[in-house]
Image (cartoon, rainbow, N blue to C red; front, side, top):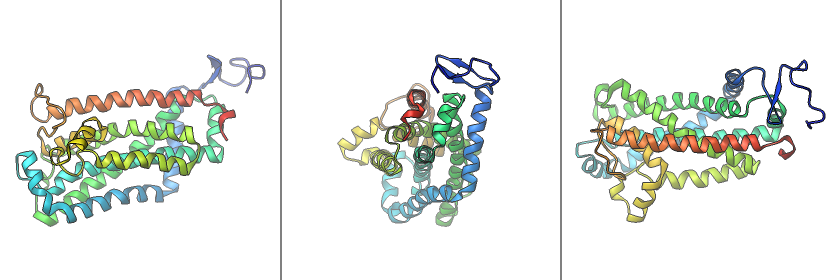
Length: 309
């Protein structure tokens, strides 16, 4: 809508203008809730998306523990300095992978909105652009909470079948530690949710978005501390892993799983115990979330209905 045809502020619409852009009379929180509710309804109506995105991590968890568990437990125990099952070593990585996949599908959903015209309607509505991104991200967070909880439960089942371990010995930091792993997965997901939505806004094509995010996702996953200790990797991989956000997400979740300092890419000793891993890892992830979240909101603000194909 051009400046000449746009209604005057408050002229029977309940909206005004801010910097040439309409602002919602609902308020930021109300706009966020509207977007969140819409995406939750969309997920409930299409449960295939949630189940299919969970299938990949489950396959990784089961196959990796069965195929590589026997040959990696010695390396894992040596790295941690204590006897450890590969199941408990792998579960934090699979939790982060689950969050990564959920973040990936966020951009794909954005492309679907672009292709069916819903995104154009959002752009010409008086809705806050930050609320559009936040509401969508919150819907992904709810999915992540459910899916990571399933992964943690499945991990214990596999561990119990293998060793008969009691629940109290599964997550060394107890129930709060398990909740912490879920929260780490949420914090981790935000930066990649922002990337996948930016890619969606740039490509505006579902196939291109899927290819682009997968090109990022899988190399980053394997060039990290996810599946084997960093020190067991080639030096060039260790260098990449030290710069890889997935390493910090996995190490933070793994520190909560084992209740000890597990980070090897940074030498931090100021906080003691597992906090030597948690504090720098969460700081890195938080900084990425703020920077890339701001970039995603900027792209939404820069979008106009005439750009949408």
